Image 1 (tube, helix red, strand yellow):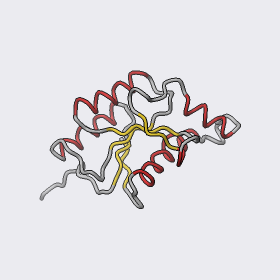
Image 2: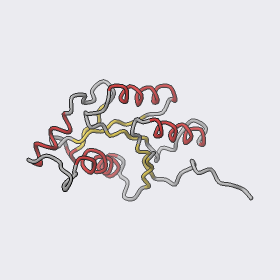
Image 3: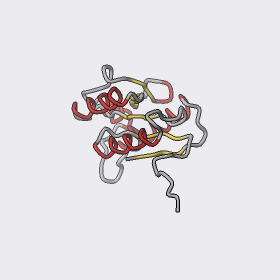
Image 4: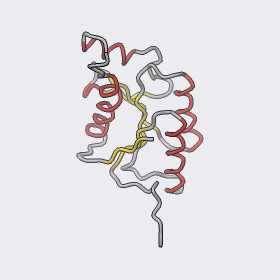
Length: 144
């Protein structure tokens, strides 16, 4: 019986890279499955909230450099088209700016009843990138 490689993925898709160890492990195995080069319609995207630890930002950057894989950095920004800003390791928010803009736009703090942070800062930002920057109508989302 031939086993298929679970790291050979259906495309188009997006690899949601969190900057954590399991996400790094997942990306490493995906790159290995593709002999070091992912398909063009399978980008790696990191959604920065501006509240990430500096070590997380450095880890994302180091993975990109060490494994020679482009990692797209996105941030929620309601002052930009589609509420999305594409940034990089040097220009990424480090003082909670996306988070603060979101709270200002909502005019109330996230709470146990209305937990909007992840949906806006991560999920909707990734969705906007896939739709408006990549032109995907449908795609698979891979999270590790």
